Image 1 (spheres, one colour):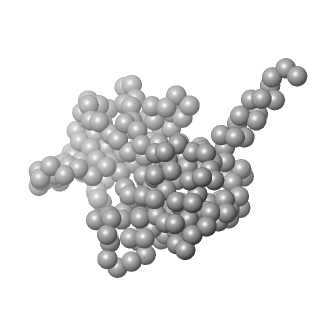
Image 2 (cartoon, rainbow, N blue to C red; image 1 turned 90 degrees about the horizontal axis):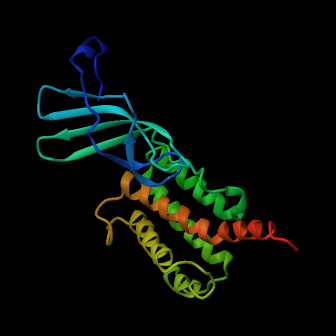
Length: 221
């Protein structure tokens, strides 16, 4: 929404009582952001059925506490749209250097596509990342679904994360075809959550073992 700055006096400061949920641009987690003390939200009505709220929040994760701005749009029909600023999905909770090069390149390109609102392209790159995991783990099968079935015996990962790999495959399949069979829409929200899931999968596969080895080095010989 473009607002003429000469009409800034029409903004009204309100108490911070609005719940703002979204993906933190630093840690990549879906969180309910927390208000900042003494920072009020601002309210604006466009003269019609749309209400707008603007303000500042913090990520609630004590290891993150990223400062973000938000714009929330609410209309009389009940629908709500929230934009987190900055919108970029930053892979700061995933060390790309610990990933195989092919996988690091894929997820990095998926993030670049997301940051530029190319959600279909991002979904396809998320699917390709899953394909690369199967390839590196020597999973076999005539198609990706079969290779994912074979992958289960080759990796140690939680059942929910393993199952999410199939969901990410479906997301990529729908992005690559004219007719979708699993997702009604592939947009910002779908890709945000897809990237969050993908990051957790990669952390489980490639970072947890490294963390354990680092911890073992601290033990007495």
